[in-house]
Length: 240
Length: 304
Image (cartoon, rainbow over all chains, first blue to last red; front, side, top):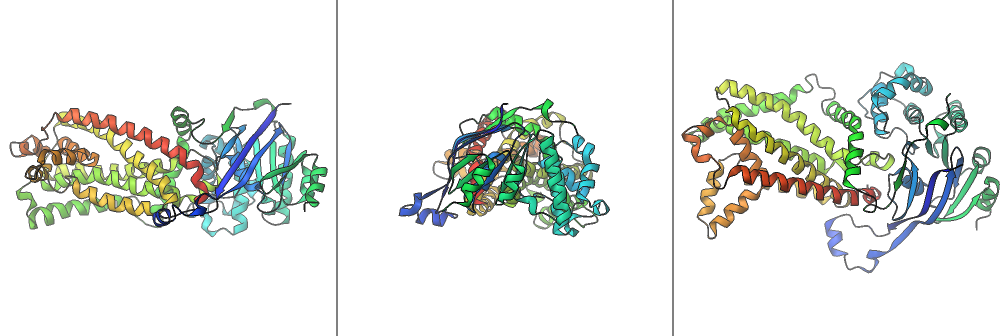
């Protein structure tokens, strides 16, 4: 089976000392720490086969989210490259770009178009989206009146219905109450069964073992271990 | 549920900016995202007039009041109409295009910073944001254009149909200049928040350096009196905003063809040659602006 995503020697640097204004830029130009760089990711390479689910684990600050952002295209790598399907949905932060004064329904169209879906295609699945979010009664209410749970539910429902080949999930299984979480997990399982490729970022070893076909462990921006989820999780548990 | 197996789509390569980027690919991406442009345009307009009864009608009322002020207060009380015929129309024409340029540049400059949350979470062609600012300004422009037509009727002064052809090079300058500056400033403003204030001051200066409230000949005559006078005159005429203003007056201000308006005609060098050279320069500028934008847009996200 061929690969779906290929991460090839990806590095990403951040400058530790970041200038914001012209004043700082001018005065600190010759300061010693001007060029102090910090590698959020250093030479990370791996592949995800089509239809497989990869778990991306690591501690806070290990570079998981940076990597996910690079795969989604929000950030460009400093060097190296990523090859991925054009049709990719990222559940990075839900409801990004919601317009508070517009209704839930209007926001479904707006958010879908931000995620790259045409109005016509959205119309086809809008009922599914509304049903999945479970807020049909409030769908014609401006989203500024929504609770944070409703907000996240709607965002999740929209993102998951964009028919992606590749799904990027960042710790969002903590969204909503227990029944909704269960629903999300079921939906993700369903997408696995449909042969979609998924990259799942998590702290939770349990999720990796039950959900993923393979796993990648990052620590301080470097790839420490990859392969069988159980083995990678063990390495993770034994990190110094 | 149907399986995804059968419709594997094309792949995309994400690499450091400048390596894989081509302007044609960027234009293709942009064209593919036109639905997003309309969605964002709708969001901007809906957001601006939220909770107001008249909504877009307010866009109409402001220029109407302005037209009244120019005609009565500036034209009659201050006596500007003594030196410039149909002064209200003259000034309104200049302001119409000035507003289009300055509104789209000033809101375009902050378009990346105000949409930070969006940029950090979703990928879409980043050029869409400054382009949306231009689209919003264009909608307001079109509404104000209706007021101008009303003004033609009120003052019974209609432009010569042939002169309306000037609107073609005007459009071909306004779009690349407004969009190009928005691209550069929007991405710079993420790193240096001073940019938006520099833009404000710069626009204020350019406003008075463009012959909007006065005929260009006033400045031309003054500059002629300075040492190296014709050098200053040429520098004055390099300002694309001023050129657009003059072309707009040629196109839409009827007295330009009258005996009295003849002195304001722009014949120091063949005007259309100058105009078409500016069109060329503007598109080269837009190309460079887009290159700068692509280079920086992928990396500035961390600064938001």
